[in-house]
Amino acid sequence: MVTNCEGKPVPSVTFQTRQDNQWVSVTSDQLFQGKTVVVFSLPGAFTPTCSSTHLPGYNELAKTFKACGVDDIVCMSVNDAFVMNEWAKYQEAENITMIPDGNGEFTAGMGMLVDKSDLGFGKRSWRYSMLVKDGIVEKMFVEPEEPGDPFKVSDAETMLRYINPDIAKPKLVSLFTKVGCPFCARAKAMLTEHGLDYEEIVLGQQVTSRSLRAVTGATTVPQVFINGERIGGSEELAAYLAAC
Image (tube, rainbow, N blue to C red; front, side, top):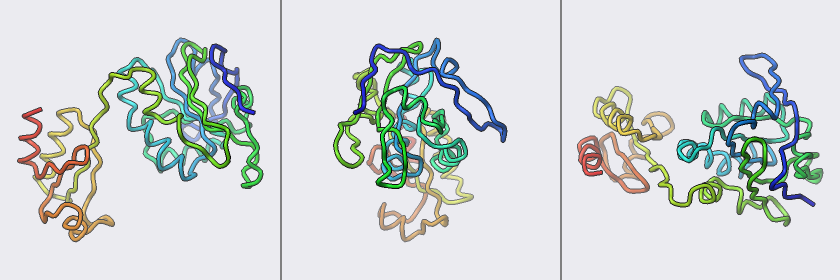
């Protein structure tokens, strides 16, 4: 039976992290005291839902959370420091503080330690998220206790709606480029100048010109997409940004 800890202080735990190839002890006080922190906890690094949706969602919305007064976003899991660091690299989760709760002490203190021995996982964290202000849990979103690995309420957008339902979410920008293309460089510079984060898809790196034609219907680069809408090349991007 998992518990809701709203109104209570977070557990006092010392976490063993790896920073610059050295062991570094990080305490609960260092993470939470005097700060507004969003925490999301999950069953395991590199697992499907955690990798495809849970972590990427918080990483993408990190700047929006910070605009709402959140000082840090913490990902917690009952994994060791090496696993958490490698997962962060794989996910390019530069906006997230990865905390390994290797012994499950913090998770147990939150009443969220569950037995997943049927999957060979041993003790792991139930999936949840929480907003912590100065070490006190203000709000928790705990996944329902049902079979499997439910993912219904601990996502980034649910937390963001609680903190500030009126905040504008960042635009999702992707662009197809080619190495050495001056028009691609111009498009990237314009996006950066306007403060728009983007995902770059480089032709020749598992993406071919055929892929470009199949997805965009175009043969030239760059091809820019914003929130699912094809904007086009650098000239069309310039016009789009000028009209915003």
